[in-house]
Image 1 (spheres, rainbow over the protein chains, first blue to last red):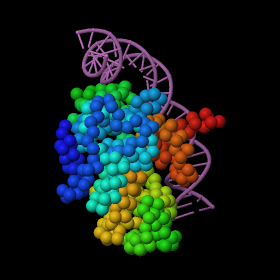
Image 2 (image 1 turned 30 degrees about the horizontal axis):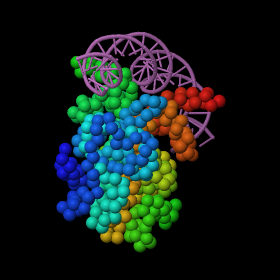
Image 3 (image 1 turned 180 degrees about the horizontal axis):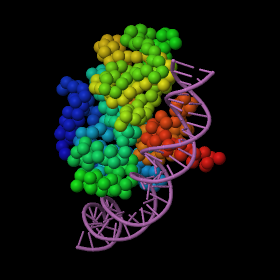
Image 4 (image 1 turned 60 degrees about the vertical axis):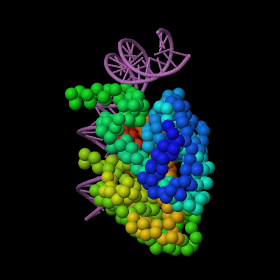
Length: 201
Length: 201
DNA sequence: CCGATTCCTTATCTTTTGTTAACGTTTTGA
DNA sequence: TCAAAACGTTAACAAAAGATAAGGAATCGG
């Protein structure tokens, strides 16, 4: 994918939160890089610091933890989603999880260092700050909803809801990742699927 | 509690994220109110818009949803915690949950309208924006950790961890609220407690 | 102060989930 | 192209959790 197209997608995403003049965009774009991540390659690995934040412009990634030697998938980012190991990025401490490309992906990245420099530019400071706030708020709401689903819904309810809201992305992902995402085992998800099939049949 | 003391606690909290000059603080404090919330009274009710955000200066509150006529407790805020139905506050849509005082509480509040006005003051705009970002990031990390615990840990592990990290606040809260918080029933938590007792005995 | 309510535990029974393993299918990668 | 690995389902059994009910202790509110 052409870098200009990728950068433009970043601008579109950014402007959904904070509008930019052409001059501001020009200044901001200097700090961005367009990276390609081959399938199965890592955006972050546990134990290393995630010093950048990115926008998935093409492809998809999954987030996973390793516990007792097992991979447990906790999240995904698809096209037009931000990605980062947020805690690691925000606190510059080692990440607890891996982020791995599920498909060949194109990512527009902003390194921690570049972000700081951008924030020191008079022209950009305020809008960067605002973008940071709005993004954090956006994902805060996502996480809030997710926690609420764990508290108030059974695994079966969570899966049914996911089927309604998940869109086509669901069909690009192995079931056992989805099971992890729901907080259950792949075997259990398979049983839930059969139960739902029988009801709707 | 004296209003000045309460306001001062807010200032201390704010300055943990963003330092303020006396002039800035004076301007900001004009927008704050100090409210008292008697035990069992509501900070927000489901269906109504939560148009303010606050800092618990004294006391404690619990967040809960009502599902099938049952109350399900999802969260708490204690002294020096922010409180709000964030999604409702940020999007000005009706809240999905209740927030109720567990004890007689003192809360320093900032209404949505006042926040907007404060953000329009040249003197405050940038620091308010930054505070908003840092708070959102702070809670984003909290939620991230919580989701991770649901994905990677069993209820028993979650409870054990909570015992380690929860502090004295745990002992001010009824067990069945904690059970909800962990995503299990009170009966199940009671069984887990017995299992843990036997092991450590 | 006392009756009512709330709270925690325990018991019983049912349902769901976890665990392990097997099997056929699909996908992968050399 | 072909063997190996990954995937989804199913089965059988064990472990844990949910539902319901009952009993006693603690707390609350008038």
